[in-house]
Image (cartoon, rainbow, N blue to C red):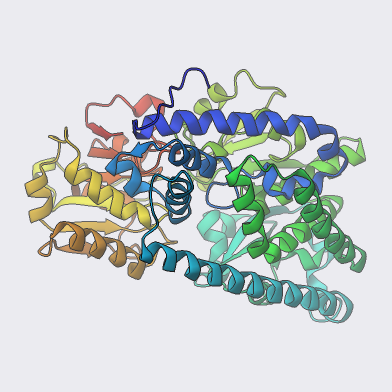
Length: 538
């Protein structure tokens, strides 16, 4: 860390914190190689928090970053502090407290106690869900699989394309087309639901998906022996983590404790791990693994890699790690494979399928000095999730656009607050005038994972804190207007971490790119980053 000067009382910026985060992440990555042979013998251990790079889940170095900054009594800039997630903010305040530089307020102590009870409740619910998953698994495999769903068994996957999906509560079967727009046009295909989104209990999501004849779940592949192996490996992961815990890392302690809230997700990931091995044995023609380097993505990929490693034979099957959004090296670091991940099968067979050529080239350049070698492909035209169905629309001049500003959100609802805050108060923002920005209606196009209630909460916090009571805002209905139309109708398109920023740049729109976290920058392709129509708030 000799190129980072961490002096006490220094006010920390986004860039300063990011450099420290990258250094700590690199140290975590290097430590993994000491257990490389163990991970290759027991691939399921790759599902532990020690190998997790998902900053929204159990990744530890982002918390170690803010803990270290607080422990050394560094003051964070207002913009940086406002951008911290709840767990990052708690970590920073706690580290300042134990460094004797700050006393916890009564509200913060109350918050800590409340979160303690919340943790206990979530852990209890996770255990209940785990037990329900096991009961459903045993009943389905022993009693139901060979009767009600006999047409969904082994021969129905032979020589077909297999597509992994997240099964959404509000989309149900339409979840497939959300991830793979040309799914219905394919002649021989099946879907594999690996994750159940918007369900409080994964067991309920599993039951919802089972009833669809062309949607497979892990239970359509597993044997009773696999269920017992999953239970054994779940216990092995927790024992492994306890034995490997580093007392020097606050982030590791937090992740270790937090993992108990996700016992159900870990069991489900082990189901997916074993079922992906079984799926490969049934010889589908192609497997498309939707990959965001999250727990269940990794489980499927590790299982596929294990099958190929164990079989020691070439099987005529195409297997892709599928990126459904534009890839950018500026984005979350978990989206850029590391050498350790490539060696251990976390990305399957290291065959990457991208949405466009810019994404392909950007990843290829990012991994140019990494071994082993990877393969890169661009999706077929009909599978491009960003293809413009409304290409007939002409470009609307900026002075004719009906909306002054639209904020395009990503998956984190807290991003809405920091975009408003930084756009209004960034000292060098002459691109979009603050007075006009606040005196005209602001439009919001929300990511499908964010509901309006969450967005309104963030907007109202901003209005209350800065006395902007007269701020008017509207939400765009994603069902009535596609994203290209939203971009075309807006004079200033404002993005945080959404990869659609590249679409806006290509359309010739004026774009404001707002950095909303020290962990990443806006997902601009490098070829678009110097466009004259972009104003960056980094």
